[in-house]
Length: 231
Image (cartoon, rainbow, N blue to C red; front, top):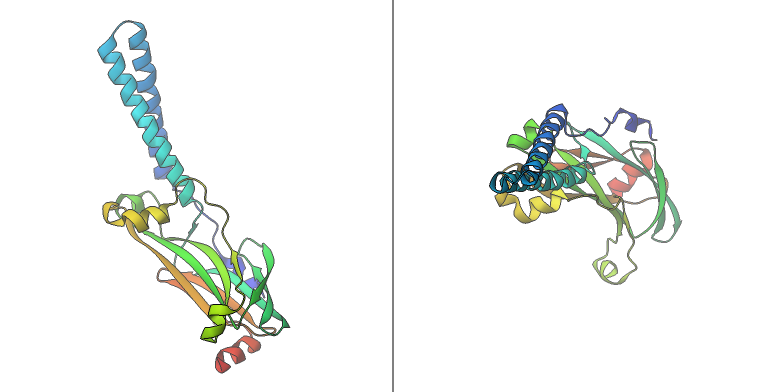
C-alpha cells in the first residue's frame, strides 16, 4: 500500500544563496554592533550610537527573518505533483471507521473517523520575486483529516471527528502572513487552502498527492473504486 510514497523528495531549506546572504548580513550586523560599542567606550558618542543602533536594528531584522525561515521549514517543498499521504479504512461500526495513514517519511498513525466520507485539508504557499531566487519554491503542509456525513442533517447534528495532521507551528507562520497581508508582501504569490474528500468504505485505500493547484485524491484499490462509483 505505501510503496508509492518512497519517491517523495526530502524537505529542503532555503538553498545556498539564502544561507550565504544570511551569514553575510549576520557578520555585518555583529561588526556594526561591536564597532559601535567600541566607539562609545572611546568617547565617540555620535559614531558609536549610530553604529550600535544600526547593528541592533539589523540583528532584530535577522531574528525576524530567522523566525520566518523556521516557519517556512514546517512546510514541505513541492515540485510538480508529490505524494503526500496514503490512507486505508477499516469499518468498525455503522458510520464508524479506523483510518490508517502513512506519510512519505515512513510514519504511520491510526485515527477514528465518523461519517460516510473523509476529508484532508492542506495549506499551500507559492512564492515569487526575490523569495523564489532564495530557493523558496511552492510548499505545502497537511493540516487535518475529518469525517463527513452524506446527509445534511447528520452533518449538522451527528458526532464529528477531526484530527490534526501538522505539528504545532514553529516561528512565524508564512501562510498566515500571506493570508492577512498578501497584498503588501510582493514575495508571496499565493497562500491558499485546499481540501480533498472521498467516501469511506471497509478495506478502501486512497492516495493523496499535492500539486501546485492543491490536493488530489485517487482510489488505490478495488474497494475504493467501488465506493466512488456508488458515491
